Length: 349
Image 1 (cartoon, rainbow, N blue to C red):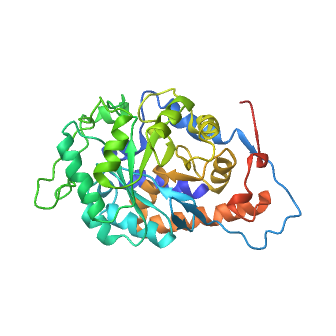
Image 2 (spheres, rainbow, N blue to C red):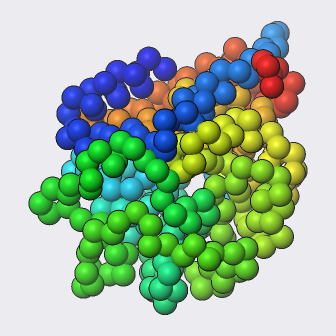
Image 3 (cartoon, rainbow, N blue to C red):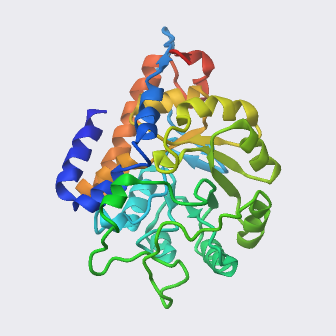
């Protein structure tokens, strides 16, 4: 969508350069960021005609929730660096659009504030702290405040080499903005450097997280069949194919490419989601055809939040919904269930 280019250009004008670079940048030479987007364009849509698409339904069922749209808002850190509405505003916009908002461990709003603002389903993205007791306390509050799942990020044992961030030495936080501890308002709100997470995390920790929180655990950061099998054997309720938006290891497999392998390994056992480089409704259709049940977006709604706050995120989700409806109709798919592998061909891979 041309809208996204305009939003990013406007966000770049509005934001402090360090803040723009933090959200826009990736690891190394940012090859993976570019290839995430380019890989979707190597999936050609193969339309069918003479199908009744007078009514197109974009709704789906995901982990027991009926969503109006298979486009979820991915976890993204420090959203009040983008706009004062921050995480609560984005959560309200997701709820109004009938989709899921995923709150980051590295948020600039406490999970209780976000839960109070939200009108739709919430997931909590978890980085496991080396202090396991601290993580247990956070998970207890996650369950207490009505989050529906824990989205465990498994691809950040250490921080990637993010050159744009290194240019600024540190990302400055304005007065009054800080990272939430998610341990309660009475406890310290602190700035935490990227990292500090438990590099010894293993598959057996999925059961621990599930038992502590009482919630299903979704594993985010899977790029191969072997790890998909490991996650399922450990009890994952769903899998997210993700390379962290190109922010961890540069030159790794694009998510559109990894999706086919992971979806084939998982089969129908649990839902498969994907993020990375998804920029319009046609990309959503491509992802569904390659085996995803839903997608997550990150940078697109970062720019929408930066330029328009909560309303901007709502308008972006409406644009995705409209674009997806058009793509489905033109591909001959009145429902998401009608999107199958026969709706695409692969160009070159």
